[in-house]
Each structure stands twice: as C-alpha cells, then as structure tokens.
Length: 158
Image (cartoon, rainbow, N blue to C red; front, side, top):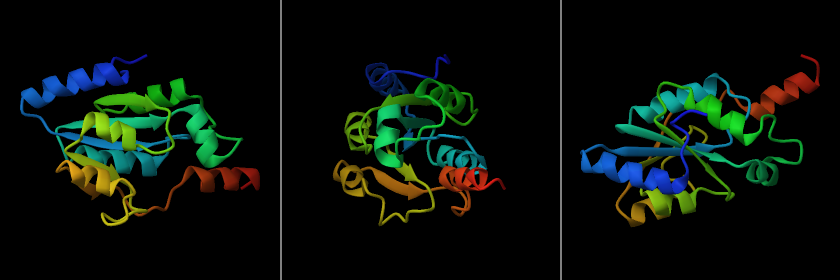
C-alpha cells in the first residue's frame, strides 16, 4: 500500500510537521467507490485550496450503512489504494463513522471541501469547521457523475 495511506495517529503527527513548515491543509471525504471523472475533478479542485490534500475514505461498514447492503463495489483497501495513487492527493485515511465530524475534530483542516451537490451554507459539517476558525468550500464540476447513477446504467444493461 502507498505511503500516502496513513492511520489517524500518524496523520495527526504528519500534519503537525507540515503545519510547522507553514503548509495549509484541505480535507475532503467520501466513499470513492467506483472512481470516476467526477471524483477526479472534485479532488483536483480541492487540491487547489491548500498546500496539502487529505482524503478521508469511509470504511466498508460505513459505506454499507450509508449506501446499502450491495455497496461498496470495491473493498476499502482497494479504494484507499486507488485514491492514494492520484497525484493531487497527499494523504488518505480510513474512517469508520457515517460522517466526517470526528476526523475534522482530530485534523482541524484549514479548509473542509465538499462537492458541488453542496453549497458552502449546506455543508453538513460547516458548524464544526467554523467553530475552530476553519473554512468550508465547494469544489469540482457540476454533479453530473455519481457512482449510484453509473451502477443504475449497468443494471439496466446500458
């Protein structure tokens, strides 16, 4: 597995070093099941908002709770590996919860980034980020791509 894939304790320590060197941190999160161009554009956009991009990826159990029993398509170790292989991603961490609030509390990113299915005002973790002085942002192209929609096409034989 890539050196970019890191556990939470290691990530907290690494980000402390990065911040001591004056670097800023952006955090984004998701299942990243069946990686597609919408994911790539979202991550490229997020990477432009800070010096370091951290991607928190939902565990298999979390994805099942959020998306249903037939998900994820790919197991967490493969999803971690795929996202870590992207040049714009600096670190990838797995999280077990259904939302990213605990990760935000531990990492305190300078900016927390969501996709264009949100606005800065509708980001669910917005209050958590603003409480410590962080910022929220939206990145990526219009939400014209989704894993769920791609899977529907395949199930219909299109």
